[in-house]
Image (cartoon, rainbow, N blue to C red; front, side):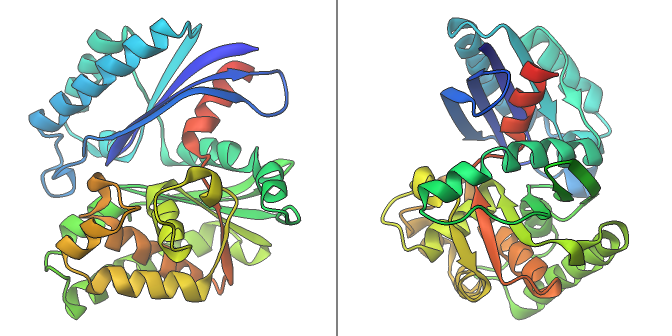
Length: 316
């Protein structure tokens, strides 16, 4: 076993995984944490990371560094994604991470982000299906990771990644661009959908999505939609991981979120407080992806880029 710590710093949240990773097979979690710090606050409009967003991230990262050290992690890797890639003052963020974590972040390009997501998501698909009493999902897989600033699309199978594309439609970016009403207006939703469909044209040109046998959905927007579709009384990662949600249920949940007020969304027992403002946009991305590519269901994974970071760090 190799004990490693992985940190994923996205546009909306920063997450930590400390795990024991064997040379092959499933890894064992020692600690998982997620905090919403909204690092990408305003970056789509200003092109810069807000000082207060960097400070929020620093406070949580300092806690993560201490926990990884206390648990005896022998290696740490922090990956930063869309918001940091896009920022003119990226150097300020990198200097903060160096001072707080003792090493710089890996600000990875979109294609590398996609490959890490694919690795993390697909490593446990068979085990998750068995836990639900069903057959394993069939490859090839189209892994879709809906983040705050971007969404990654990866097509692959047991042999690895065949094609990947990252596009700048994420739940935070779309909310800040378009979804200002409470609830959003039809015009705001239409503008968001137009942005998503334009991005999907880029995806279709780069990724042969028609070859996919299974859609695998990742990240908080997808898992929250799944929790709502399953009508869970509280968020339950074990129930959500490996669940299969039909497109009709995704359409219904998305419509409900986009017509609900902020107060109503916040009242759902499965809703993380940090997702209340952006879940409508995240659900819309999932719904438009499924409709545009004629996908009947999504297999939901609680494992994603964070697990991919840990596996790559431990196994090279």
